[in-house]
Image (cartoon, rainbow over all chains, first blue to last red; front, side, top):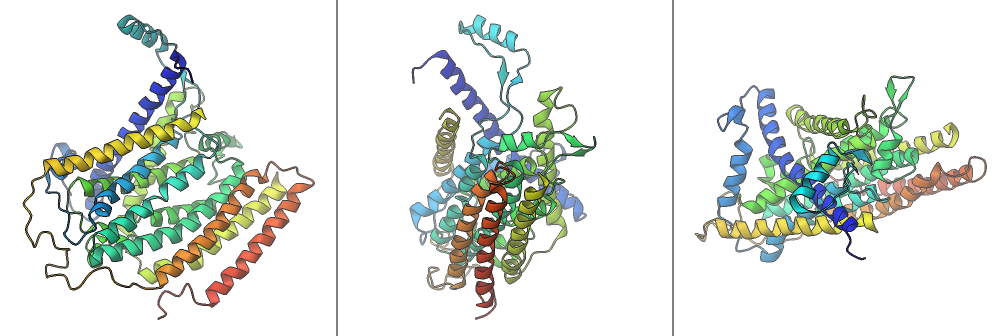
Amino acid sequence: MPIDQQSIQFFVGILLKIVILFVIGLLSPVGMNWVERRALAFMQMRLGPNRTGPFGLLQSLADGIKFAFKEDVVPLAANKWLYIFAPVVAVVPAFMATIVYPLGPKGVDIPFAASINSFVYSLTGIQLNLSTMDLHVTSFNVGLLYVLAVTSMGVYAIVMAGWASNSKFSLLGGLRSSAQMVSYELSLSLALVGVLIQAGTVDLVKIVEMQQGTYFGFIPKWYVFVFQPLGFFIYLISAIAETNRTPFDLPEAETELVGGFHTEYSSSLKFAMLFMAEYVNMLTVSVLATALFLGGWSGPFVSQFPLLAPVYFLLKVTLFMFLYIWLRGTLPRLRYDQLMNFGWKFLLPVALLNIFISATIALFAY
Amino acid sequence: MKEYLPILVVFLFVLGFAVTNLVLAHLLGRHRNTRAKLMPYECGIDPVGSAHQRFSVRFYLVAMMFILFDIEAVFLLPWAVIFRSLSEKLSRPFVYAEMMVFLIVLLVGYIYVWKKGVFEWNRG
Protein backbone atom coordinates (compact mmCIF):
# COMPACT_ATOMS: atom_id res chain seq x y z
CA MET A 1 0.00 0.00 0.00
CA PRO A 2 1.60 3.31 -1.02
CA ILE A 3 1.64 5.88 1.75
CA ASP A 4 -0.39 8.77 0.42
CA GLN A 5 -2.28 11.50 2.18
CA GLN A 6 -5.56 9.58 1.99
CA SER A 7 -4.29 6.64 3.98
CA ILE A 8 -2.53 8.84 6.53
CA GLN A 9 -5.77 10.70 7.12
CA PHE A 10 -7.60 7.38 7.41
CA PHE A 11 -5.07 6.05 9.90
CA VAL A 12 -5.06 9.21 12.02
CA GLY A 13 -8.86 9.13 12.02
CA ILE A 14 -8.88 5.56 13.32
CA LEU A 15 -6.30 6.35 15.96
CA LEU A 16 -8.22 9.41 17.12
CA LYS A 17 -11.48 7.49 17.43
CA ILE A 18 -9.78 4.62 19.24
CA VAL A 19 -8.30 7.08 21.72
CA ILE A 20 -11.72 8.69 22.26
CA LEU A 21 -13.34 5.28 22.86
CA PHE A 22 -10.43 4.34 25.09
CA VAL A 23 -11.03 7.45 27.19
CA ILE A 24 -14.74 6.61 27.37
CA GLY A 25 -13.71 3.12 28.47
CA LEU A 26 -11.35 4.54 31.09
CA LEU A 27 -13.85 7.04 32.41
CA SER A 28 -16.75 4.61 32.59
CA PRO A 29 -15.33 2.66 35.56
CA VAL A 30 -14.51 5.94 37.31
CA GLY A 31 -17.93 7.46 36.72
CA MET A 32 -19.85 4.24 37.15
CA ASN A 33 -18.03 3.49 40.38
CA TRP A 34 -18.98 6.87 41.82
CA VAL A 35 -22.60 6.55 40.73
CA GLU A 36 -22.70 3.02 42.06
CA ARG A 37 -21.43 3.94 45.49
CA ARG A 38 -23.59 7.03 45.80
CA ALA A 39 -26.79 5.55 44.36
CA LEU A 40 -26.39 2.34 46.31
CA ALA A 41 -25.81 4.35 49.46
CA PHE A 42 -29.00 6.33 48.91
CA MET A 43 -30.91 3.11 48.28
CA GLN A 44 -29.66 1.85 51.63
CA MET A 45 -30.36 5.14 53.45
CA ARG A 46 -26.66 6.04 53.69
CA LEU A 47 -24.74 8.95 52.23
CA GLY A 48 -21.85 7.21 50.50
CA PRO A 49 -18.53 8.93 49.73
CA ASN A 50 -19.19 12.69 49.88
CA ARG A 51 -15.98 14.29 51.15
CA THR A 52 -13.56 14.13 48.19
CA GLY A 53 -14.53 16.99 45.92
CA PRO A 54 -18.09 18.23 45.37
CA PHE A 55 -20.57 15.41 46.14
CA GLY A 56 -17.57 13.07 46.45
CA LEU A 57 -17.06 13.28 42.67
CA LEU A 58 -13.28 12.95 42.98
CA GLN A 59 -13.46 9.83 45.14
CA SER A 60 -12.86 7.39 42.29
CA LEU A 61 -9.99 9.51 40.98
CA ALA A 62 -8.42 9.51 44.45
CA ASP A 63 -8.82 5.74 44.59
CA GLY A 64 -7.15 5.44 41.20
CA ILE A 65 -4.14 7.45 42.35
CA LYS A 66 -3.99 5.41 45.53
CA PHE A 67 -3.92 2.19 43.47
CA ALA A 68 -0.80 3.42 41.67
CA PHE A 69 1.15 3.99 44.88
CA LYS A 70 0.17 0.82 46.69
CA GLU A 71 2.71 -1.89 47.35
CA ASP A 72 2.85 -4.38 44.49
CA VAL A 73 2.76 -7.79 46.17
CA VAL A 74 3.32 -11.09 44.37
CA PRO A 75 2.54 -13.90 46.84
CA LEU A 76 5.36 -16.41 47.25
CA ALA A 77 3.15 -19.39 46.49
CA ALA A 78 1.77 -17.82 43.32
CA ASN A 79 2.76 -18.80 39.81
CA LYS A 80 4.57 -15.54 39.18
CA TRP A 81 4.18 -14.89 35.47
CA LEU A 82 0.61 -16.13 35.15
CA TYR A 83 -0.26 -14.05 38.20
CA ILE A 84 1.29 -10.92 36.71
CA PHE A 85 -0.16 -11.31 33.23
CA ALA A 86 -3.73 -12.26 34.17
CA PRO A 87 -4.77 -8.57 34.48
CA VAL A 88 -3.30 -7.90 31.02
CA VAL A 89 -5.31 -10.78 29.58
CA ALA A 90 -8.38 -9.31 31.27
CA VAL A 91 -7.99 -5.73 30.17
CA VAL A 92 -6.85 -6.18 26.55
CA PRO A 93 -9.90 -8.07 25.21
CA ALA A 94 -12.21 -5.83 27.25
CA PHE A 95 -10.93 -2.73 25.48
CA MET A 96 -10.62 -4.48 22.12
CA ALA A 97 -14.40 -4.84 22.06
CA THR A 98 -14.83 -1.06 22.16
CA ILE A 99 -13.94 -0.54 18.49
CA VAL A 100 -17.24 -1.88 17.19
CA TYR A 101 -19.43 0.34 19.39
CA PRO A 102 -21.94 1.76 16.87
CA LEU A 103 -22.15 5.26 18.37
CA GLY A 104 -23.71 6.79 15.26
CA PRO A 105 -24.33 6.47 11.53
CA LYS A 106 -21.92 6.63 8.61
CA GLY A 107 -21.00 9.81 6.77
CA VAL A 108 -22.03 12.51 9.26
CA ASP A 109 -21.05 16.06 8.27
CA ILE A 110 -18.26 17.35 10.46
CA PRO A 111 -19.25 20.73 11.90
CA PHE A 112 -16.91 23.56 10.79
CA ALA A 113 -15.07 21.13 8.50
CA ALA A 114 -13.93 23.91 6.17
CA SER A 115 -12.54 26.05 8.98
CA ILE A 116 -10.73 23.05 10.51
CA ASN A 117 -9.19 22.31 7.11
CA SER A 118 -7.98 25.87 6.62
CA PHE A 119 -6.80 26.11 10.24
CA VAL A 120 -4.66 22.97 9.88
CA TYR A 121 -3.38 24.27 6.53
CA SER A 122 -2.37 27.61 7.98
CA LEU A 123 -0.67 25.89 10.91
CA THR A 124 1.19 23.02 9.24
CA GLY A 125 0.84 23.52 5.53
CA ILE A 126 -0.96 20.18 5.12
CA GLN A 127 -4.11 20.35 3.01
CA LEU A 128 -6.76 18.18 4.67
CA ASN A 129 -10.05 17.43 2.98
CA LEU A 130 -12.29 16.67 5.95
CA SER A 131 -15.96 16.71 5.18
CA THR A 132 -17.76 13.73 6.67
CA MET A 133 -16.97 11.11 9.30
CA ASP A 134 -18.39 7.83 10.56
CA LEU A 135 -19.51 7.93 14.16
CA HIS A 136 -17.96 4.54 14.84
CA VAL A 137 -14.40 3.27 14.54
CA THR A 138 -15.16 0.49 12.13
CA SER A 139 -18.04 -1.59 10.87
CA PHE A 140 -17.20 -4.97 9.43
CA ASN A 141 -19.52 -7.77 8.52
CA VAL A 142 -18.64 -9.96 11.51
CA GLY A 143 -19.06 -7.22 14.15
CA LEU A 144 -21.22 -9.12 16.60
CA LEU A 145 -19.20 -12.33 16.30
CA TYR A 146 -16.05 -10.29 16.90
CA VAL A 147 -17.48 -8.92 20.16
CA LEU A 148 -18.54 -12.39 21.30
CA ALA A 149 -15.14 -13.84 20.45
CA VAL A 150 -13.17 -11.09 22.12
CA THR A 151 -15.25 -10.84 25.29
CA SER A 152 -15.19 -14.58 25.90
CA MET A 153 -11.40 -14.29 26.19
CA GLY A 154 -12.12 -12.69 29.57
CA VAL A 155 -12.77 -16.14 31.03
CA TYR A 156 -9.11 -17.01 30.52
CA ALA A 157 -8.05 -14.06 32.64
CA ILE A 158 -10.30 -15.14 35.46
CA VAL A 159 -9.12 -18.74 35.36
CA MET A 160 -5.50 -17.57 35.18
CA ALA A 161 -5.90 -15.15 38.07
CA GLY A 162 -7.78 -17.69 40.18
CA TRP A 163 -5.40 -20.56 39.59
CA ALA A 164 -2.11 -18.66 39.62
CA SER A 165 -2.82 -16.95 42.94
CA ASN A 166 -2.55 -20.34 44.68
CA SER A 167 -5.03 -19.32 47.32
CA LYS A 168 -8.12 -21.35 48.09
CA PHE A 169 -10.47 -18.42 47.87
CA SER A 170 -9.05 -17.41 44.49
CA LEU A 171 -9.26 -20.91 43.10
CA LEU A 172 -12.88 -21.34 44.20
CA GLY A 173 -13.78 -17.93 42.83
CA GLY A 174 -12.06 -18.64 39.53
CA LEU A 175 -13.74 -22.02 39.15
CA ARG A 176 -17.17 -20.69 39.99
CA SER A 177 -16.72 -17.74 37.73
CA SER A 178 -15.59 -19.74 34.71
CA ALA A 179 -18.41 -22.28 35.08
CA GLN A 180 -20.94 -19.49 35.44
CA MET A 181 -19.70 -17.41 32.52
CA VAL A 182 -19.53 -20.46 30.31
CA SER A 183 -23.08 -21.51 31.23
CA TYR A 184 -24.66 -18.14 30.64
CA GLU A 185 -22.70 -17.45 27.49
CA LEU A 186 -24.80 -20.17 25.87
CA SER A 187 -28.14 -18.51 26.52
CA LEU A 188 -26.55 -15.17 25.64
CA SER A 189 -25.45 -16.27 22.20
CA LEU A 190 -28.70 -18.17 21.59
CA ALA A 191 -30.70 -15.06 22.51
CA LEU A 192 -28.87 -13.21 19.74
CA VAL A 193 -30.03 -15.71 17.10
CA GLY A 194 -33.53 -14.20 17.17
CA VAL A 195 -32.13 -10.74 16.44
CA LEU A 196 -29.97 -12.11 13.64
CA ILE A 197 -33.01 -13.72 12.00
CA GLN A 198 -34.75 -10.33 12.08
CA ALA A 199 -31.79 -8.27 10.94
CA GLY A 200 -30.16 -10.65 8.47
CA THR A 201 -26.70 -9.25 9.21
CA VAL A 202 -24.01 -9.47 11.91
CA ASP A 203 -22.75 -5.94 11.31
CA LEU A 204 -23.75 -3.89 14.37
CA VAL A 205 -24.11 -0.64 12.44
CA LYS A 206 -26.43 -2.29 9.91
CA ILE A 207 -28.45 -3.91 12.70
CA VAL A 208 -29.04 -0.46 14.20
CA GLU A 209 -29.93 0.94 10.77
CA MET A 210 -32.57 -1.79 10.43
CA GLN A 211 -34.27 -0.49 13.57
CA GLN A 212 -34.84 3.08 12.37
CA GLY A 213 -38.37 4.31 11.89
CA THR A 214 -41.68 3.64 13.61
CA TYR A 215 -44.84 1.61 13.26
CA PHE A 216 -48.10 3.63 13.16
CA GLY A 217 -46.03 6.72 13.86
CA PHE A 218 -45.31 6.03 17.53
CA ILE A 219 -43.99 2.49 18.16
CA PRO A 220 -40.25 2.48 17.35
CA LYS A 221 -39.04 -0.42 15.23
CA TRP A 222 -36.70 -1.53 18.00
CA TYR A 223 -36.26 -5.26 18.32
CA VAL A 224 -37.53 -5.21 21.91
CA PHE A 225 -40.90 -4.35 20.43
CA VAL A 226 -40.61 -6.24 17.13
CA PHE A 227 -40.93 -9.92 17.99
CA GLN A 228 -37.91 -10.03 20.32
CA PRO A 229 -39.15 -9.10 23.83
CA LEU A 230 -38.41 -12.63 25.02
CA GLY A 231 -34.96 -12.50 23.43
CA PHE A 232 -34.30 -9.21 25.20
CA PHE A 233 -35.09 -10.62 28.63
CA ILE A 234 -32.96 -13.71 28.03
CA TYR A 235 -30.16 -11.43 26.89
CA LEU A 236 -30.61 -9.13 29.89
CA ILE A 237 -30.43 -11.94 32.45
CA SER A 238 -27.52 -13.76 30.84
CA ALA A 239 -25.65 -10.50 30.34
CA ILE A 240 -25.85 -9.72 34.04
CA ALA A 241 -24.69 -13.24 34.87
CA GLU A 242 -21.96 -12.99 32.24
CA THR A 243 -20.50 -9.89 33.89
CA ASN A 244 -20.70 -11.46 37.37
CA ARG A 245 -23.01 -8.85 38.83
CA THR A 246 -25.70 -9.10 41.50
CA PRO A 247 -27.80 -11.28 41.79
CA PHE A 248 -25.24 -13.49 40.01
CA ASP A 249 -22.12 -12.19 41.74
CA LEU A 250 -21.09 -15.52 43.27
CA PRO A 251 -17.54 -15.42 41.89
CA GLU A 252 -16.78 -12.59 44.25
CA ALA A 253 -19.35 -13.27 46.92
CA GLU A 254 -17.52 -11.30 49.59
CA THR A 255 -19.30 -12.96 52.50
CA GLU A 256 -17.98 -16.41 51.57
CA LEU A 257 -15.05 -15.98 49.17
CA VAL A 258 -13.46 -12.69 50.35
CA GLY A 259 -12.81 -11.32 46.83
CA GLY A 260 -13.09 -14.40 44.65
CA PHE A 261 -10.49 -14.70 41.92
CA HIS A 262 -8.88 -11.36 42.77
CA THR A 263 -8.43 -12.01 46.50
CA GLU A 264 -4.63 -12.00 46.19
CA TYR A 265 -4.40 -8.92 43.99
CA SER A 266 -3.88 -6.61 46.99
CA SER A 267 -4.80 -3.16 45.76
CA SER A 268 -2.17 -2.23 43.22
CA LEU A 269 -2.65 -1.28 39.58
CA LYS A 270 -3.04 -4.98 38.79
CA PHE A 271 -6.25 -5.02 40.76
CA ALA A 272 -7.22 -1.75 39.09
CA MET A 273 -6.86 -3.44 35.70
CA LEU A 274 -9.07 -6.38 36.71
CA PHE A 275 -11.58 -3.88 38.04
CA MET A 276 -11.43 -1.82 34.85
CA ALA A 277 -11.89 -4.92 32.69
CA GLU A 278 -15.02 -5.82 34.65
CA TYR A 279 -16.57 -2.40 34.15
CA VAL A 280 -15.62 -2.16 30.47
CA ASN A 281 -17.21 -5.57 29.96
CA MET A 282 -20.37 -4.22 31.58
CA LEU A 283 -20.20 -1.29 29.20
CA THR A 284 -19.82 -3.61 26.21
CA VAL A 285 -22.78 -5.69 27.31
CA SER A 286 -24.89 -2.54 27.69
CA VAL A 287 -23.76 -1.29 24.29
CA LEU A 288 -24.79 -4.59 22.71
CA ALA A 289 -28.18 -4.45 24.43
CA THR A 290 -28.68 -0.92 23.13
CA ALA A 291 -27.55 -1.71 19.60
CA LEU A 292 -29.38 -5.01 19.25
CA PHE A 293 -32.62 -4.43 21.11
CA LEU A 294 -33.08 -0.75 21.98
CA GLY A 295 -32.58 0.71 18.52
CA GLY A 296 -29.03 1.96 18.99
CA TRP A 297 -28.72 5.66 18.22
CA SER A 298 -32.29 6.06 16.94
CA GLY A 299 -34.46 8.70 18.57
CA PRO A 300 -36.39 11.84 17.69
CA PHE A 301 -34.70 14.31 15.25
CA VAL A 302 -31.67 12.08 14.62
CA SER A 303 -32.19 12.21 10.84
CA GLN A 304 -32.09 16.04 10.92
CA PHE A 305 -29.25 16.36 13.45
CA PRO A 306 -27.02 13.28 13.16
CA LEU A 307 -24.77 14.58 15.92
CA LEU A 308 -27.58 13.74 18.37
CA ALA A 309 -26.97 10.06 17.61
CA PRO A 310 -24.14 9.43 20.11
CA VAL A 311 -26.08 11.35 22.75
CA TYR A 312 -29.10 9.06 22.43
CA PHE A 313 -26.84 6.05 22.25
CA LEU A 314 -24.90 6.90 25.41
CA LEU A 315 -28.13 7.84 27.18
CA LYS A 316 -29.59 4.39 26.54
CA VAL A 317 -26.32 2.75 27.61
CA THR A 318 -26.34 4.81 30.80
CA LEU A 319 -29.89 3.72 31.59
CA PHE A 320 -28.82 0.13 31.14
CA MET A 321 -25.79 0.63 33.38
CA PHE A 322 -28.02 2.18 36.02
CA LEU A 323 -30.16 -0.94 35.90
CA TYR A 324 -27.11 -2.87 37.12
CA ILE A 325 -26.86 -0.65 40.20
CA TRP A 326 -30.58 -0.76 40.79
CA LEU A 327 -30.55 -4.56 40.72
CA ARG A 328 -27.63 -4.59 43.11
CA GLY A 329 -29.59 -2.47 45.55
CA THR A 330 -32.68 -4.67 45.19
CA LEU A 331 -31.93 -8.36 44.78
CA PRO A 332 -30.21 -10.86 47.09
CA ARG A 333 -27.58 -13.23 45.76
CA LEU A 334 -28.52 -16.64 44.35
CA ARG A 335 -27.16 -19.91 45.72
CA TYR A 336 -24.74 -21.69 43.38
CA ASP A 337 -27.01 -24.64 42.62
CA GLN A 338 -29.88 -22.22 41.98
CA LEU A 339 -27.65 -20.33 39.58
CA MET A 340 -26.69 -23.42 37.61
CA ASN A 341 -30.25 -24.77 37.62
CA PHE A 342 -31.59 -21.46 36.39
CA GLY A 343 -29.07 -21.22 33.58
CA TRP A 344 -29.25 -24.77 32.30
CA LYS A 345 -32.82 -25.80 33.06
CA PHE A 346 -34.68 -22.56 32.44
CA LEU A 347 -32.79 -20.01 30.35
CA LEU A 348 -31.39 -22.47 27.83
CA PRO A 349 -34.75 -24.07 26.88
CA VAL A 350 -36.41 -20.67 26.80
CA ALA A 351 -33.67 -19.41 24.47
CA LEU A 352 -34.30 -22.38 22.18
CA LEU A 353 -38.02 -21.62 22.31
CA ASN A 354 -37.28 -18.03 21.34
CA ILE A 355 -35.33 -19.23 18.29
CA PHE A 356 -38.24 -21.44 17.31
CA ILE A 357 -40.74 -18.56 17.67
CA SER A 358 -38.55 -16.09 15.76
CA ALA A 359 -37.94 -18.54 12.92
CA THR A 360 -41.64 -19.36 12.63
CA ILE A 361 -42.56 -15.67 12.53
CA ALA A 362 -39.89 -15.03 9.92
CA LEU A 363 -41.22 -17.93 7.86
CA PHE A 364 -44.74 -16.52 7.66
CA ALA A 365 -44.56 -12.80 8.33
CA TYR A 366 -42.22 -11.62 5.57
CA MET B 1 -9.21 -5.38 4.62
CA LYS B 2 -9.25 -1.70 5.56
CA GLU B 3 -12.05 -2.08 8.10
CA TYR B 4 -10.13 -4.77 10.02
CA LEU B 5 -7.06 -2.58 10.60
CA PRO B 6 -8.48 -1.00 13.82
CA ILE B 7 -8.36 -4.43 15.50
CA LEU B 8 -4.58 -4.49 15.24
CA VAL B 9 -4.27 -0.83 16.23
CA VAL B 10 -6.44 -1.16 19.31
CA PHE B 11 -4.70 -4.38 20.32
CA LEU B 12 -1.27 -2.77 20.29
CA PHE B 13 -2.59 0.36 21.97
CA VAL B 14 -4.26 -1.45 24.88
CA LEU B 15 -1.39 -3.90 25.25
CA GLY B 16 0.94 -0.93 25.62
CA PHE B 17 -1.38 0.60 28.20
CA ALA B 18 -1.59 -2.64 30.21
CA VAL B 19 2.15 -3.27 30.21
CA THR B 20 2.78 0.34 31.21
CA ASN B 21 0.43 -0.21 34.13
CA LEU B 22 2.37 -3.30 35.18
CA VAL B 23 5.66 -1.42 35.04
CA LEU B 24 4.20 1.55 36.93
CA ALA B 25 2.79 -0.74 39.59
CA HIS B 26 6.25 -2.20 40.04
CA LEU B 27 8.07 1.15 40.07
CA LEU B 28 5.76 3.40 42.06
CA GLY B 29 4.85 1.22 45.00
CA ARG B 30 7.31 0.51 47.79
CA HIS B 31 8.66 -2.98 48.33
CA ARG B 32 8.90 -4.05 51.94
CA ASN B 33 8.06 -7.72 51.94
CA THR B 34 7.58 -9.81 55.03
CA ARG B 35 6.87 -13.50 55.32
CA ALA B 36 3.29 -12.95 56.44
CA LYS B 37 2.64 -10.45 53.65
CA LEU B 38 3.66 -12.93 50.96
CA MET B 39 1.43 -15.70 52.26
CA PRO B 40 -1.81 -16.54 50.48
CA TYR B 41 -4.72 -15.05 52.39
CA GLU B 42 -6.53 -17.56 54.54
CA CYS B 43 -8.41 -15.52 57.12
CA GLY B 44 -5.22 -14.53 58.91
CA ILE B 45 -3.99 -18.00 59.86
CA ASP B 46 -1.14 -19.86 58.14
CA PRO B 47 -2.44 -21.53 54.96
CA VAL B 48 -3.18 -25.25 55.30
CA GLY B 49 -1.67 -27.19 52.40
CA SER B 50 -1.57 -26.08 48.78
CA ALA B 51 -4.55 -24.57 47.01
CA HIS B 52 -3.90 -26.68 43.95
CA GLN B 53 -6.03 -29.60 45.00
CA ARG B 54 -8.62 -31.72 43.28
CA PHE B 55 -11.93 -30.01 42.66
CA SER B 56 -15.42 -31.15 41.83
CA VAL B 57 -15.88 -33.08 38.59
CA ARG B 58 -19.04 -31.04 37.99
CA PHE B 59 -16.94 -28.20 36.62
CA TYR B 60 -15.58 -30.50 33.89
CA LEU B 61 -19.09 -31.60 33.01
CA VAL B 62 -20.21 -28.00 32.68
CA ALA B 63 -17.27 -27.29 30.39
CA MET B 64 -18.10 -30.32 28.22
CA MET B 65 -21.76 -29.33 27.98
CA PHE B 66 -20.71 -25.82 27.08
CA ILE B 67 -18.63 -27.02 24.15
CA LEU B 68 -21.48 -29.19 22.86
CA PHE B 69 -24.09 -26.46 23.01
CA ASP B 70 -21.79 -23.70 21.89
CA ILE B 71 -20.98 -25.52 18.68
CA GLU B 72 -24.70 -25.76 18.13
CA ALA B 73 -24.88 -21.97 18.50
CA VAL B 74 -22.13 -21.73 15.89
CA PHE B 75 -24.35 -23.73 13.53
CA LEU B 76 -27.37 -21.57 14.29
CA LEU B 77 -25.77 -18.16 13.72
CA PRO B 78 -25.07 -18.41 9.95
CA TRP B 79 -28.45 -20.00 9.41
CA ALA B 80 -30.12 -17.10 11.25
CA VAL B 81 -28.25 -14.49 9.23
CA ILE B 82 -29.26 -15.77 5.79
CA PHE B 83 -32.72 -17.01 6.71
CA ARG B 84 -34.74 -13.96 5.68
CA SER B 85 -32.82 -13.38 2.49
CA LEU B 86 -33.79 -16.81 1.14
CA SER B 87 -36.49 -16.88 -1.49
CA GLU B 88 -39.98 -17.01 -0.05
CA LYS B 89 -41.52 -19.89 -1.99
CA LEU B 90 -38.92 -22.58 -2.31
CA SER B 91 -35.90 -22.62 -0.10
CA ARG B 92 -37.14 -20.89 3.03
CA PRO B 93 -39.64 -23.56 4.21
CA PHE B 94 -37.06 -26.21 3.35
CA VAL B 95 -34.29 -24.54 5.36
CA TYR B 96 -36.77 -23.91 8.17
CA ALA B 97 -37.70 -27.60 8.32
CA GLU B 98 -34.05 -28.60 8.21
CA MET B 99 -33.20 -26.38 11.15
CA MET B 100 -36.20 -27.59 13.13
CA VAL B 101 -34.97 -31.17 12.68
CA PHE B 102 -31.59 -30.02 13.97
CA LEU B 103 -33.22 -28.35 16.99
CA ILE B 104 -35.29 -31.46 17.73
CA VAL B 105 -32.23 -33.71 17.62
CA LEU B 106 -30.55 -31.26 19.94
CA LEU B 107 -33.56 -31.23 22.25
CA VAL B 108 -33.48 -35.04 22.51
CA GLY B 109 -29.83 -34.85 23.51
CA TYR B 110 -30.63 -32.09 25.99
CA ILE B 111 -33.40 -34.17 27.61
CA TYR B 112 -31.05 -37.18 27.79
CA VAL B 113 -28.37 -35.13 29.53
CA TRP B 114 -30.96 -33.73 31.93
CA LYS B 115 -32.29 -37.22 32.79
CA LYS B 116 -28.73 -38.43 33.35
CA GLY B 117 -28.46 -35.78 36.03
CA VAL B 118 -25.68 -33.65 34.58
CA PHE B 119 -27.49 -30.46 35.60
CA GLU B 120 -28.12 -31.64 39.19
CA TRP B 121 -25.54 -29.55 40.98
CA ASN B 122 -26.32 -30.96 44.43
CA ARG B 123 -26.18 -34.68 43.74
CA GLY B 124 -22.98 -36.25 45.04
